[in-house]
Length: 74
Image 1 (tube, rainbow, N blue to C red):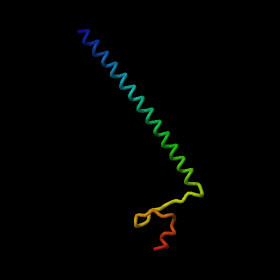
Image 2 (cartoon, one colour):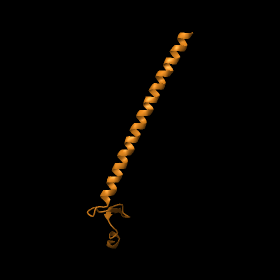
Image 3 (tube, rainbow, N blue to C red):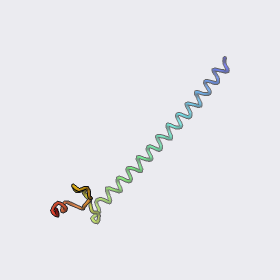
């Protein structure tokens, strides 16, 4: 009887260690992904402010064109 209980306790300890380890890995990866996404977003915002960047807007026909002057062409 004690052998069965000891076996169950050992199994639960191993399962708990695996669960906590997987949870920690998940949190670390999730934090790393958030940091990478934030860095990419910051870089994109800095690039958007540059004067040589043209902002394209989608027209009614589905084509991306720069600025608002495309409405005067039609």
